[in-house]
Image 1 (cartoon, one colour):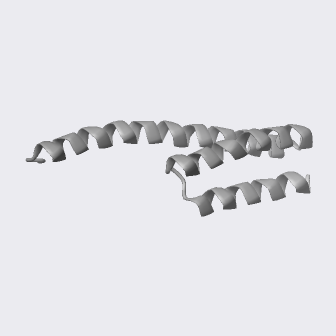
Image 2 (cartoon, rainbow, N blue to C red):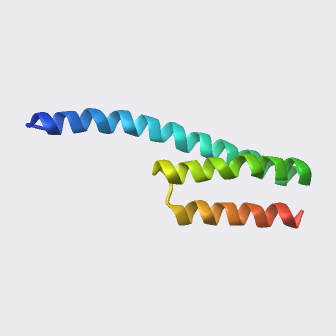
Length: 86
């Protein structure tokens, strides 16, 4: 158990940040799933529109520190390649 006031505060802060980061990751996953479902449906225009919405979300995840920049770049690259292949 934390003994110092700083350690107690850090535990409280970590709990709050974990909740915020969980919500951010969930939001990013939702946008990515929209792109993947449009790809599965075979609708290129819907997939391209969903991808256009998902890219800023991935970039925002990188800026906020919930995603590594290479992970986001890899996801964007793979989704873009799949959309253009339709």
